[in-house]
Image 1 (cartoon, rainbow, N blue to C red):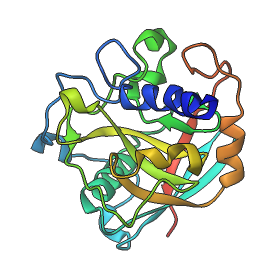
Image 2: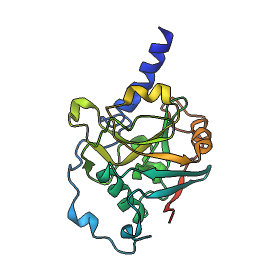
Image 3: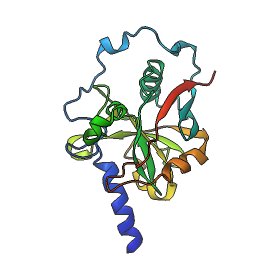
Image 4: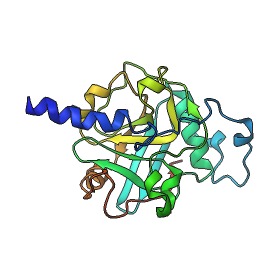
Length: 220
């Protein structure tokens, strides 16, 4: 009984982390389509066209580097991540939510400024991504998955436009299989995932010391 209760406590924050007033992945008022104007960028850090079908990225943090691979079978999420990385969108963003024995979450642009701390978890690029939930991709350790609003306000399970989480413990995250889009995996740096997960947090699962993404760079 104790084990089941523990899992329930862990699942609730992730499911509702984008609901209004909670630590959300997407604001309720965000658009559901990418505005064409958002794709017209200049001064890109790299050319997305140069990347392979399954690109590899280094997420460089102040606690070390996590190397991830994006799946070709989830092209909408892959292409969106590539686009944001090419624009430097993730640079300076914090891991704003950490639950040891569960997952670490980041991708909210509001977290670049501590003045926005009360709203951490509610930011995004202004759009959502259609779900690409596939049975072959589960929440194994190091899995890269998209945050999203809860089912009540998001019956199609659309993903946040930028927020994502990395699985720290497969056993406690297994209950999320089939409910969230897993679009990549950690291929090196699981020790860094564990190091981030071990950072002390407050009652809101906010780390009490900074965990910041310095850059997200393709490995060519």
